[in-house]
Image 1 (cartoon, rainbow, N blue to C red):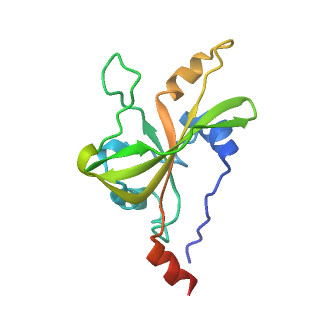
Image 2 (cartoon, one colour; image 1 turned 45 degrees about the horizontal axis):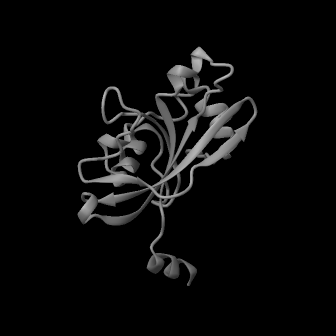
Length: 164
């Protein structure tokens, strides 16, 4: 019988340990370019690397490279072939031992901006914030990656059936 464990780190652990030490934890958390895949395809990719999530509503963690809209731009590209990720909440500060991080909440929309439809796919992006007073050259490599927590929220109808 196979044994499985549930991976559910705190936000502080995501920033202080996993994101800060990305190069050392690639075997625990996979690297997936979120802009090359639709959110509903990620569980299948995830399954190829680890055990498939037991539920479509289970959190999936992965590193994703930051892709910029233009070579000399700070604007991040968040479009896929069939839709785009839109920032939907306030950016949150995460304070952790020896690391400063931030969290952005994004929602996936199918279609293009003017004719888009909101989906139940939500992603939290965690990234490190470099201390300008004490720049760390090792951190420069990790800045080009974000740690993502992807999940599908249940519909109101589905949530109602789960309660019954």
